[in-house]
Image (cartoon, rainbow, N blue to C red):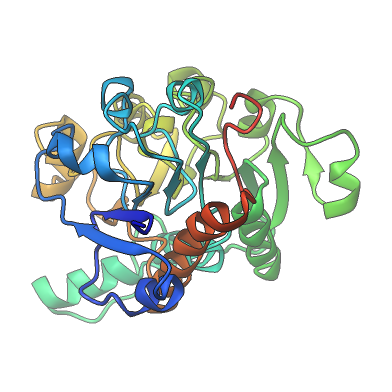
Length: 337
């Protein structure tokens, strides 16, 4: 009797020890590098032979036409929080549950959000670059440096990562407030943070806004010109969620106009980025108007060796548990299957 085959797509690591240890002799494993252009499909035979499909990165999209080829697949697991690269409704029509791994990288992403903020408000990257490029030894003149204590720290999306970020912001004596329409009434009493019932109200009441929301039809482009116009002057925006949540043109205009003093972005609407975009081109070329006011990191907030190990273990065990017992963990479309 053939053993169930688990296909692992786009592994970022050369090691295979965690996956093999969890599968033992009960399952076969096939690792598929994905070095193709985003949106490019793998050979049809790969889709057809998989009993379980592990997507290790979001570059490989599982659209309706791809899912139609996965005739043996019993479960799909994406090894992260975001799932906008998978058509979970189309998967449900085919009886395929789609699960994610929402509990890896929480501390890393929260740390990264604060690191972006600290790098801006303490001038870390700016001082380092200035010393290397021009020499000198001066503390004055960095446009984004300011005291954090007492600033209003607004969070969009108070899930696991949002809560972890809020705790860190509180540790710096900032005044935390949040907007999350999905939390039940009274949740603000449990967490002890001020709640706003609209995005506009949160933006108007925040010196710093940190985004921690998934990319959905409702959140795509939610940080647009209108949202940014509600901010007080010289606000700071941090995004470690999904690039599509923000309108990059609106960010550029807000930075030029002074509504935003600075921004720290770990994610962009297109990844790898389109450096032809005016904002990214100005940042890359160090134009005076944007210099020291924008920090970009390569969707790396999740990364630490420990978080990668957690991701591999949780992704693989989610598939194995379902294949063995039918138990589902963090299923995104269970109500549809």
